[in-house]
Image 1 (cartoon, rainbow, N blue to C red):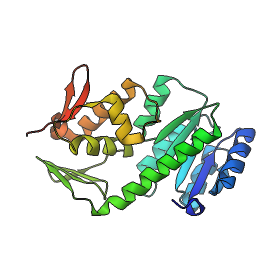
Image 2: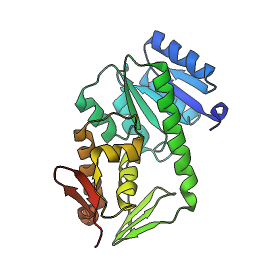
Image 3: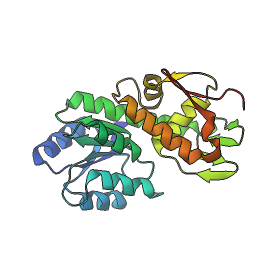
Length: 233
């Protein structure tokens, strides 16, 4: 991955943290844009689409959760990776961030080295997704999954999934009958260094089942273990 070509937008209202991030990301070889409020951040996204957004949750005006919601609802910006930065580490905040489609979640205070590792992991994962265009589509019953195109058809009709929901679906559907623990689901979607609660995984599965409609029952709960995709339909 060539960092010189990767543009990161940092949306953070605390000047010392913003300066710290700007200095270290420039030093690491990224192109960096900064914004200190939600409105400015959204404006800079429209000016030039970044490859990744570091987004503070608590912002003046439009907060980070609302920004994330708007970006995921816009076809032009829905696939931009978002890492949320926040001083809040409550489970409800993590779940809400995941529900809105955040790709990672880092609480303050944080290590610059750890954050940079997370950034590299998310960008690498996005790059792998971009290269999946040659991958064969998955056809299971009334469900078709075009991995490279991020497209899911339920009974021939397209359904919109968040980035995380799509990766969970691909992980499960790629190995029908295989039981995934919640930890293994997180591993498959976000990597081994991503810490998240069981509740957050359950929320993703519930949302995914709902969006899959009559195909939602393809995902089975294995009590006390995790989830699996039906082996025979």
